Amino acid sequence: MLIDKRSYLFALRIVKAYKYLTKQQNEYILSKQMLRSGTSIGAMMREAKFAQSRADFVNKASIALKEANETLYWLELLHDSEYIDEKTFNSIYIEADEITAILASIVKSTKENTEKYDNA
Image 1 (cartoon, rainbow, N blue to C red):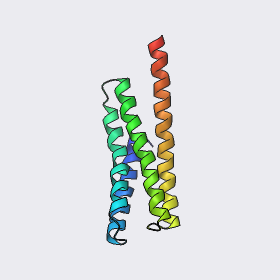
Image 2: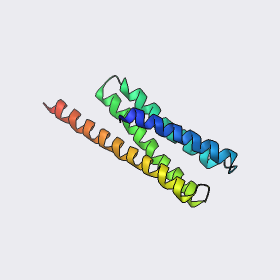
Image 3: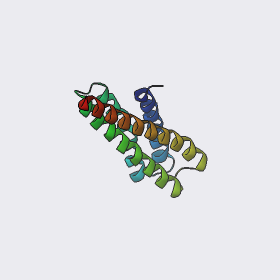
Image 4: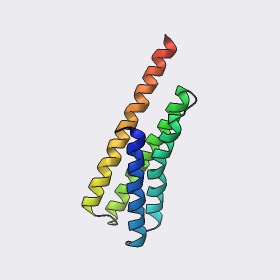
């Protein structure tokens, strides 16, 4: 599955998690941070699709990577403060971690290919 589609589906999971946390757990602060970072991953990759240059693409993908890493942080905090249970945490955290790894690979390989292209 392409990263833009995968990050969109992940954003939907984040929205549903946010709805649960606010309605069932009455938690608004941490979940809002998770919502912001978790949904911006897909938004940045959508922007990256129409980047004006390789450097612009790398910049947008790098921001998506930072947002994915931040989402991992908020998920850990929500789990460790007992707002989300182990099963839910593992399910969504694994997906966030995989997306983070994919984005790291995309950024790294694009940078390497850009350097090769620039040095040719």
